[in-house]
Length: 484
Image 1 (cartoon, helix red, strand yellow):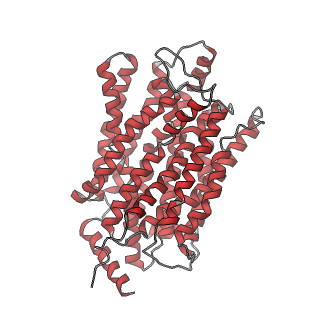
Image 2 (spheres, rainbow, N blue to C red):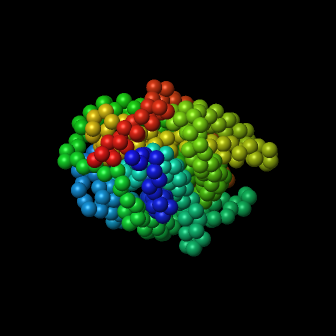
């Protein structure tokens, strides 16, 4: 009898479609995460720190959508597939709301109404995003019953996902080149950048939403759900908590992710960091690309690292390394801010950002792989698979941590004096940001995420779905499905 856990099931076009789909989806998420706060501050004229708090609250309020979507996925009997059908339903609202968030509203002089508008539109966008996020992450466990093949497709697709998250740093300069009167793409030494104008933000959102949703649609169009289970149960928040409580390995993954939420902080304040450290919003591409190259290398090496060690050891190694690299980068940055003309410090500064990127396989790949393994573990122990519940818990965790990291990062931006200095630069009374502002923002961009990454190691010390135990579970489930 052929062991289905050893057979290759996925065709190249499916891997490509899944990867491009996640790329498109994350391009939209990355745009909101990187540019919404800057749009709200510079165009709508609100306080950037308060925007961070509103984003966090909206994410927490929208958390009710995660168990609902997870339950709908697990109960779905759609002929299209339980994951693919939900992805299809999410595309239109995601496209529309991704543009609405960047509308230059006529009532912005009324700050109370503007804050309400920001909160409500972001809340609706968050719910639309959840409709696509839960099934697009959960389908990874259903694409193939082969755990090795699943690890590989998660690695490849999440590399694309990481690139997609940073796609806005390329799209924004392109739009700024086309639309006159706004931000400069290239800033000469000693020249002050002009902030982005409302039309630039709007057309960036339109272009990103259209491209992102078109690519996202490739997942239901091309991929197949091969691990099929049915459930008639209505999954409530209580059921999810129970499932989490009875799935100790999944609980450890979730707690670890929460402790390491600071790793999401850098992306949330990348635009502000580029403006402060490099002198232009559009030079965010430089920060993003340097770190992204390291991140892509990390994710490409992850399958090999997992095979050599295992998921647990690889996660711990990358997290400890991330702490060391982040602290090193902060120290180098501090001295570089005081002496920008020092070529050695300049090289070390960009090298340190590249080194930080090498840790991100831990936070982008490992939770996905481990959650898929935890789904198998739960089915092995209880007979219930519940991918929807497990992945709704994971996606909720990712979203809350992203919002929490962004909120904390924007609080640091607020206390650094960023907004006041930016207004002074516009007025021509100062020529740039001082060293104190740079240090505070760079601490939030590097050192603090590294410290929190180190804390995330603690729960992982007890994670045990690795090695022989993981192989035994996969083999038992494979034999069960062969008999069915």
